[in-house]
Image 1 (tube, rainbow, N blue to C red):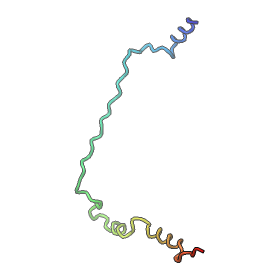
Image 2: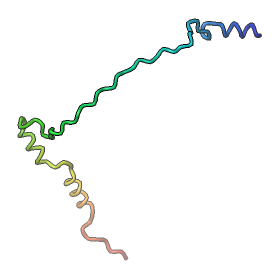
Image 3: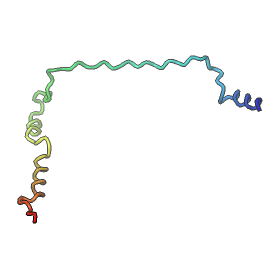
Image 4: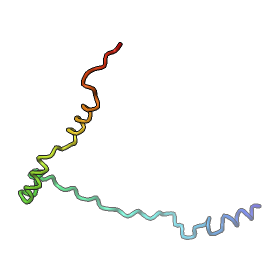
Length: 84
């Protein structure tokens, strides 16, 4: 039985003939350099290249809150129900 165990452990899947006891070191990856903040940059950074589009965007509401409030008002009755 011991002979069989020795043979199994000496077989290729269990033995590592190139094992030198040292693991290869993982490759080091350099961290990206963070960009400096540019304090002079504004939201409208195109500086007049697309003023027509900017005017349309500025005129529209940011959210659809007006439609939501209108639907909520339509759902709720204007007079409260009497509790008997």
